[in-house]
Length: 317
Image (cartoon, rainbow, N blue to C red; front, side):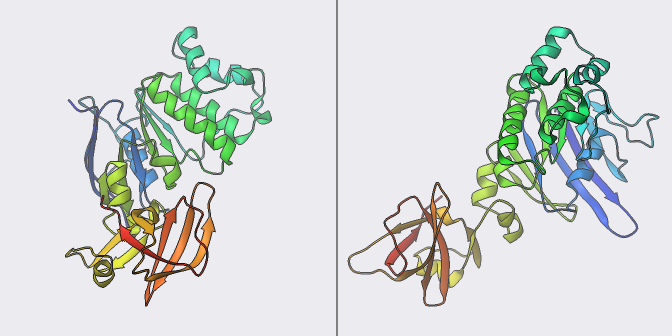
């Protein structure tokens, strides 16, 4: 039996298709990311899974049980599925410990473990109006977890957080799965938030699944420029440009990441000239040109300078 089965979910308005025949399965503890541009249907899909939005057709089945939508439930939700929206809120002027006490459905020992994972032990005496955005986010997650869900749905949890706070929250979300054994689905559009965490990525555009697969296949073998662009910088190589690099392929276009090239010098032939160099801390990205062909290549080596002539080849993936 699948932990979660999403089958042929469709949702429309009079003006647009929000979700179009969306289907996928999730096993227990599998980490799934739903990615896509703003308006692609990501949040709507999470709300349908949570029982907060009624689909026009299709069904959500959790552990063999069909999840009912708000038109079928007097109170639209499911006790085993927790949903953290982008517009989460906490009761004002209460201490954190009071907020969590009112929501707690588990033992004090289990709750203490959740508070530790969420890094909020030191915040218990603070009032909710005295918290930073990152602290509020972690408390909102803890409040959901002490209701003892089996599935946690996170809608853009890293939005508007600085790098330090985002780093803490990433560790929290990672520990929710590893230490608390809670299955998660996360919506995000930032590759830095998703590639290292996800087991499976589902890419949406205009309510349709563009591509689905593991992070490596999505990143290195995107089906089109839309998918490629969601997960970082890339080069588009035409058939003629592929031949220049010695690649035999029938594909009219391929999408290659800057790190998908090998950069070197040859004694007898250096066709590409360095036009620009950008430093990103852990690597350089170098703009190269040959005739009408322009590519960006990533390297960790710092011995190149503008004007140098070099050679490149494609790294076989």
